[in-house]
Image (tube, rainbow, N blue to C red; front, side):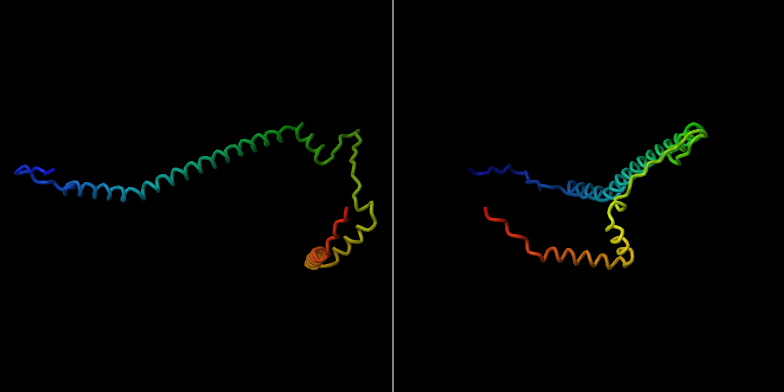
Length: 146
C-alpha cells in the first residue's frame, strides 16, 4: 500500500519544544520537593513518637499521684507497715516462719561453699571449663545389645 502525502502537511515531531520544557519543569519540581517531603514525613513520625511518650509519662504521673494519695491514708500506712516491716500492734503476737535452707540439711555443701569462697573467681571459671572438657573427653558407653 502506498502512503498518500497531502501537499502542505508536514509530519510533526513526537515531542514539541513546549512539551519538552514542560517535562523538564515537572521533573525539576519533583526533584526539588522530594527532600522537604521526606523531612516532613520524618518529622510527623517524630511528633507521633513524642506524643506517645508524653501520654506514657502522663499515665505514670497519674499512677504515682494515686499511690501518693494512698500513702496519705493512715490505715494504708498501718497495713503496709504490718505487711512489709512485720510490725504488730500492742497486745498482738507476731510470727515469722522461715524455711530451713538446703545447706543446713547436708554437711558437704558448706565445705564446698567455703572452698569456692576462698579461691578467686577466675579459678572457679577455669575449673568449670576443665570439668566440661573432661566430660566431653569421656567416651559414651555403647548401648547394650538386645
